[in-house]
Amino acid sequence: MTMIDADLLKPYLTEADNARMAWRTTVAALSKSPKDTLEEGFKAVKIAERTYYRCCEELANALRGEVARAEGAS
Image (cartoon, rainbow, N blue to C red; front, side, top):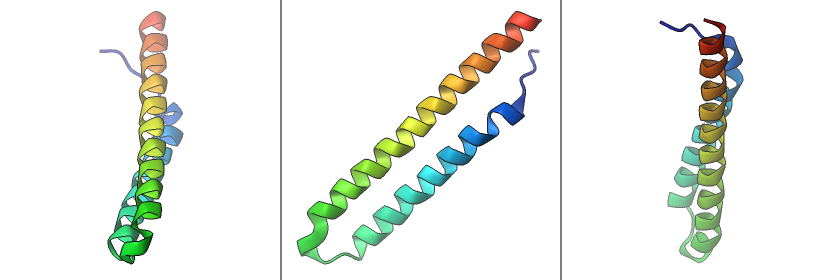
């Protein structure tokens, strides 16, 4: 089994968690918004989704790099 340094991934996990919470908060706020502001709300949700997906991509890239490093060391 290949061991990786989980501490290197913690900042990426934290950012993904923060982005997920921001997305959920944005969606919750949208559900309480007046109908005339829905278009702005949908834009905010899309931005929050993109931020979350970017964080997930960065996490996956960091994990991929750490696994490659660990496999190269073994």
